[in-house]
Length: 421
Image 1 (cartoon, rainbow, N blue to C red):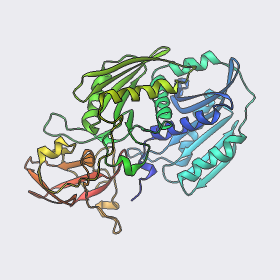
Image 2 (spheres, rainbow, N blue to C red):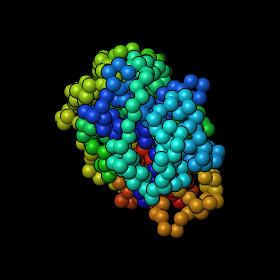
Image 3 (cartoon, helix red, strand yellow):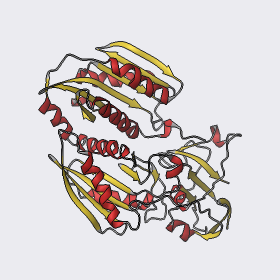
Image 4 (cartoon, rainbow, N blue to C red):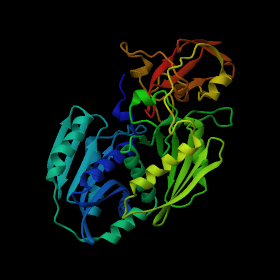
């Protein structure tokens, strides 16, 4: 089954729109896009794009994205649009854009409060391509009333600054032949308590050493996992360590906003600092060479090739004790799941019909044809009696006792679509 957009985080969608907007305006106009910009007492708007003329700027777009299914609260199309309009009242952009992906693919655009686009698309790709190929080239504004220094000040405001830095890293690295995924969903590593319940973790940025292609990433451990902060924060390292234990990257690190400069610290899996660099902020965009140079610098610590290579398929075969599976990335939970509910792991959706009924045309079998897939596998062992599991050509066929096992089939998806038995 293909990865469903509804189970991709809104942060990932927002950062890709940010990159497309920034790249589109490069060479056409002076633009500044701001992720999660603070809009007074109304909260944070997903994305605001300014275009500037000299030292004055004007808000061209305000975007509101909605793809998360929520935690029981019903999200309607009108609620998504109304939220966008509330933020718009504080920013006063030329265009207010609502991208509603919760149940269908809706694009609604207001120009100065009047609906100029209200379209339903059959696919997210169709919506995305329409906006950037058809609507964006015709968008204009003649209102330049906001001092540029005020716009830069909004970029530097916490926590907007860390969102901006992450979006910049993702934009630059994805354009350089690597794969940088914002808020890459994964299963948390077991905590040191008997009743560990697996939950979703969303590392700020997960970077693979290959160009974005799910078939390639599927069997590769991440090259680097990064946590971003608007200022120095002692908690950032422990958060990054949690992501390291969940995804098993080759390296992990932190990125701190330090006013008009950015501090990057990268560690190896044992926690030793390999690299600590300060790169300057641009106006406000980062220089591509500074960001790409960080990745090239990691090659000094990863002989013999400059970047990790995706290994050939190595299916699990035979009997593996649970400890060995955990060392390779599997998670063991003391939680007893209820398959009649929609959520098997908090934050992840289960690909089952109502009341836990399986779809008849879907293959739920768990196949681990390379060790990296084990980072997405959870074995539920509430009575602590699980000792081993057996695989044949990668497929899980039995364990020493009856057990429920769940797996997310693709990196970064929030969709559990593999279940055993």
